[in-house]
Length: 193
Ligand code: C5P
Image (cartoon, rainbow, N blue to C red; front, side):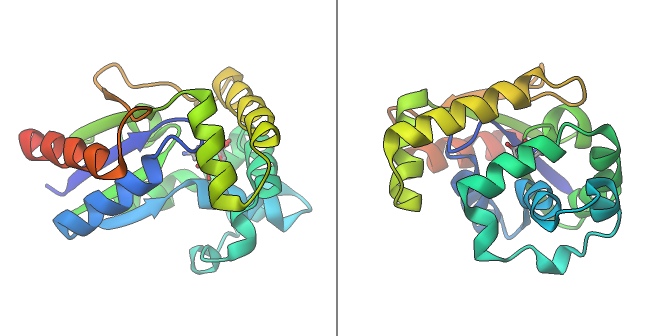
């Protein structure tokens, strides 16, 4: 059985950093599932056709990291047919040996409900906005508005809303350094193994 780790949480909570560190530590593959929705949103035209024709090789593009790409992703992510078109790819990825780490919004609830470890990573709105502003070289107040708008849409949508799985371990990184948060996650994975 592959060791699947599901990590969910709102934007800029630290889940991507933790996911990458876990994957590196255990020698697992990592999939940032937000990039799938970002690529679909950035494509323009019919989002359902874009999701069905998505070439995962195209995900490593810098333009997908922008706040505008995040907003476009969040809009197409509310379309059930878009989500459905991306399920198989994510589940195949999750089933890779010896293990895989996927981060997103619905990994523990929809994509990998049987994951060996589920983490739900959060941090206060202000701290997330500060982190994102530093990362993108953008204005903090503007980032705060952007994150809140996106989180509200992601949490309120009918299909696969952002929320912790019932058996997810909650990790609030507001007061933690990256090293502390990563150490907690590694510890949780060891105990789950
Ligand atoms: O994680 P990231 O900020 O890159 O995600 C961009 C957007 O993609 C999110 O705001 C959300 O709407 C959508 N998303 C999703 N389900 C996932 C990952 C991302 O709906 N598993």
